[in-house]
Length: 264
Image (cartoon, rainbow, N blue to C red; front, top):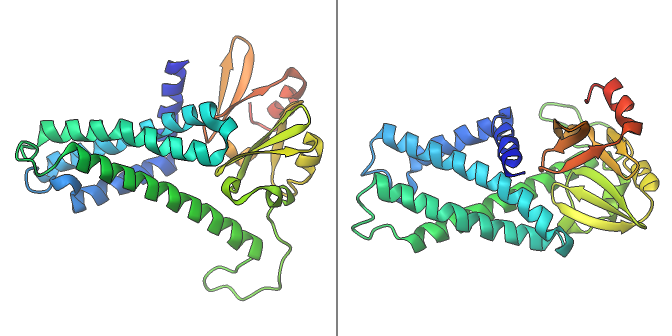
């Protein structure tokens, strides 16, 4: 299980978008040199330091997100988000501090302390997560408003592209819808912003996804096609791996449809 999670984190890191994000983080950190890493480190050492730390942060962030989502999902998206930030910061801070100790002599002088590193990491992680939520909401609002791009002529108001199902969700669970799953008389709507249970039938929830392209994988599961990042096979069973780490089972009944669609 843990090895599989590590491999999924590796595939996540190697995706083009995440690699580009990692490169931007490294360049920004090399230039600004947080934690007093400018004076005691040459350019090459500073680049290696931040490349390793940023990569470790992305790996830890992915793993923390998956584990917190599984453990705290039942408590709501806000509890999962807070737990994710706190746990991630508590894991990354000692790593950053230890790396600075090994690569810089300023720690001995007391100019950089564990408390200072912890506060910096906690604030940075919270700000990055908040920015991600803001960008997600902004993208959804722009899409719903049908805003023209730069240099385009204003067009007549278009029908909102936001799926009707998204309007049922509270603000804390808003985001691109990744996965729908049925349980008893409820449907769990899983988004990039969290998860929320709605009292309705899965068939009706899928109908309210409107123009969002998705696939039925099981009598109790539906996934957005754009959310699929990998396919995992184990002892004859097939699972679709989503961008948030969720593994969705594929039943034999729906496997042929997914094969025809080129998904598995």
